[in-house]
Image (cartoon, rainbow, N blue to C red; front, side, top):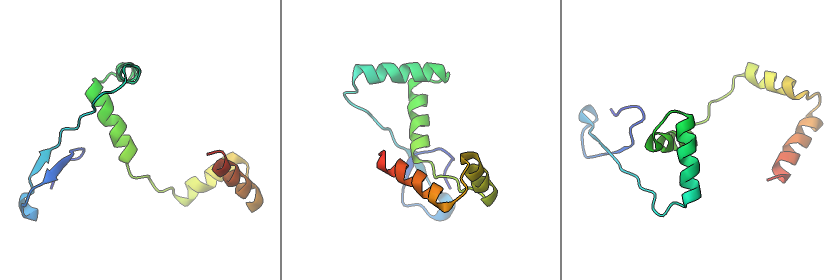
Length: 98
């Protein structure tokens, strides 16, 4: 039993009395240009630097949402795909562009 968004360690507690201890993360020797861009991004989102960093980390580790069949069909139509060969060509081009 933890809190949503909490990062922590569960110490030997039963499932009924879970104890979450927050973990402090630290980034050392961050280049000035990256810190400047992070501060600008934080200001743009009306957050503190720490809040912005946590939002970035949460986004990076968020589990992807599964699309419904209707959403997949809408994306296929938006791409204008008509044949499986066209879909394969798009996937190949995306893969080769990495």
